[in-house]
Image 1 (tube, rainbow, N blue to C red):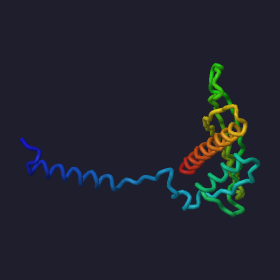
Image 2: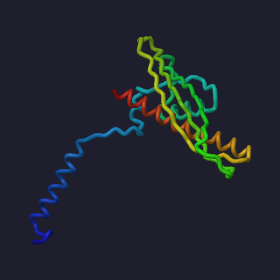
Image 3: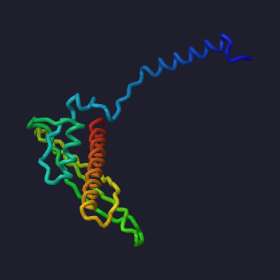
Image 4: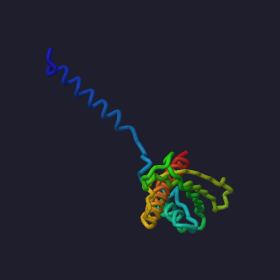
Length: 168
């Protein structure tokens, strides 16, 4: 029996068309879209940054969630706690050592519209690795860059948490 006979071809085409019709009724809202931002439900006012890492988080959130100038918009304030640790368990003669930069970011969203809404707090932690060596300038630059990468990753995680909370 051949796969190319007429009844099987018709059955296969009908199955494909039926599947396409069934899936066309589905709607997905990806986290990476700007649909929630365009609705204006996530318009946040951002506090002033106290450090470079806080500034990175504020910029990432503002870029992804959208800024606002409204006085009634909820105030988003971020606090950052950076940490550095060595990842190797034993000392060797190799001057290059694996290090880990960690950033713990806490986002507090405080309503200011007088509705008496609850304060929402989100805490996320992100890490980034870098290599430490005996060159002071290169080591400092690598550490700062790793902390900035970790701050961007924490900001992305905070953004997803805020979107998930807003969709409920």
